[in-house]
Length: 188
Ligand code: 5GP
Ligand code: MG
Image (tube, rainbow, N blue to C red):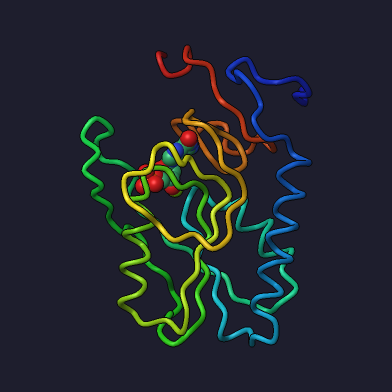
């Protein structure tokens, strides 16, 4: 099997390379570890949003120096892109009861804001001891609703990005960098 060392044809440009991402995740993990210092394992839950956040979740959680549990949820993606009504639905819930616990949401990207604002509303209703949000990417130009983010990796321009967990039609998730893909890919 050939191991790919050059950029795939579909990649237009790399926005954030592997070293840059890893350095930022280290900084975020250090900040989170300091903020939650002294917490007990059973009180602190990282909740990753599938599928896009799975790699960020793996990297971030392994770099935390405070004990924590991990759990996951899955939300519906946009049902219809053209009609961005902001309708979001939970497809898979956490296995852990978050009530009375310190919860940190781990998400891949903040775009319009509908997904995170929905999730924060649902989680707040369950009365966690605290609720914070960490996101690796944000596209500020796309925001439709304001969302509170406590730990942010990078702001990026309004382009569709892939890699580091993010996909296009379930492809490109395992690229170690974050890249824009060529328009020809969408048109296929
Ligand atoms: P929002 O509800 O904030 O508009 O959208 C957030 C969700 O849209 C993310 O969790 C992600 O699934 C998806 N998304 C938004 N922008 C991008 C992007 O550039 N690339 C990928 N792969 N997903 C995106
Ligand atoms: Mg997502």
